[in-house]
Length: 263
Length: 225
Image 1 (cartoon, rainbow over the protein chains, first blue to last red):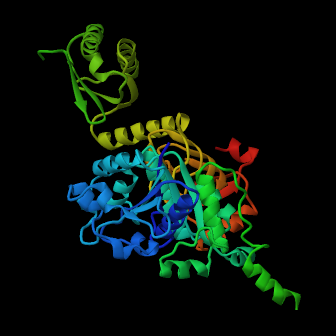
Image 2: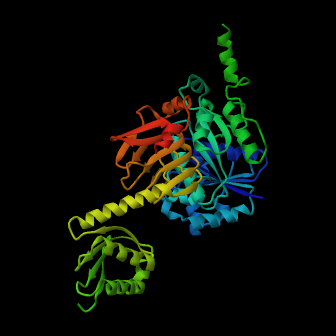
Image 3: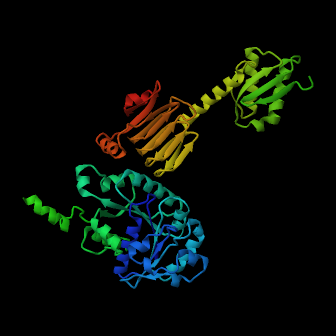
């Protein structure tokens, strides 16, 4: 049984691409056959975060226009042979593809892969409509900021209007120290407004920046963010995993901080 | 006069052109005939009525009115003398009637209204869910939100200042009742939300002298609405 999941947010810069890269890699680590599709035509990023930029020959638009077969455009991951990327075109724009074409493409991929993750562009225009066209379910990424939450709320409404009822929430870049001080919205605050199920919370972790720069998703690593992403993968597969303790009693960071507290 | 009774319509009502000569009883018969023939056109219409060509005493007027309402679905809202302020008066009167109706009947909306979504209705509106920031609800009558009202709500949208807005959790960005606006305080969105949580209780908003008042819902208050 294969599933098509769109990862979307409305607002830009909240971590859609990072989430797609990490969740995709995580699912591949759990032995699933996975394709990541970058639908952000003209502003492609997912290949960079995955560290596969140097392997791109064909892209999404080539496939849709029939310049190549799907197989030719799919890039195999460096580490995981069951993980593939269908990169976006950089020299074209969102109007190069329409929702019907996306749906057809995704339906074709469904036959061979367990998970198809669609990295959605920011905004609610053509690119968004393309990205959600073939999706069975959606993961909404938001940060605990009112602007991101407003946009997420709008996106949830648009998804409902397009008959995508299964939407789950990732709260990204949480800073528990700020939440504790009351300076940042907590997971509960975010959920109170958006009123959809949480599928994961990812702490603000500098390891993410490093991993992104290196083009190596950190999912599954020992870092808090790496654990959080892996938990999300398990939950996507239907497992019931308790929420990670983001204050990180077992985390390296807390141990480190703990050293100072004792003094 | 070739025809003893002529019906003419104006934007908000009906003008009856009556023969000044024929006996009243015959005139009544003619009116009945006329309306039986054309009554379907005015089915369930609410109109203002005026007489021209013949002056009727109050008793005669009453008889004509009864003839019309008995033979058609027309509801005569008022009887007008000729001309002066006729249109304006009819319009206002009909609007008042519609406003009253809007306040007495309602529609349900099930589900949460999210940013960018908008519901408008010609009656009162009851939302079974939240109204999030960026969402808008507009009702000609009253508004009741069985959830959190965090977006914009316009009640009495046709200018009825007597409308009200009630919510289990009243935290709107902007309210409008009739012609009166009220907006939330200028605290940042998150801190406003945190602050509210301490005092959450069902509240009701009404318009008083160009200000929106928000108060806890009490029995006394409800009796006055």
